[in-house]
Image (cartoon, rainbow, N blue to C red; front, side, top):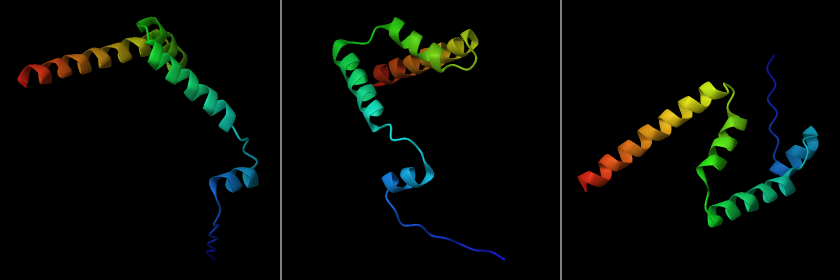
Length: 83
C-alpha cells in the first residue's frame, strides 16, 4: 500500500511543525557581519581563519582550497589578457 500526503504550508509553519528552531535572528547578525566585512575590506588572514573552521581536513583542506583559488585567479588573469 502506498499513501501520499501533501502538506501546503509556509517554511515557517514547517519549521514549527518539525520542531526546528527559528534562527532568523542569528542569520541576520551573520549577514550584517559579512556585509560589514565586505565594506571594510576583507584581509587574507580573515579568509584563511574562516576556511580553517569550515575545512574538514585541516591543513590539507586549506592547501586544496588555496590551490583552487590560485587556479581560479590564473584563469581570471588569462581571460583579462584575451580581452
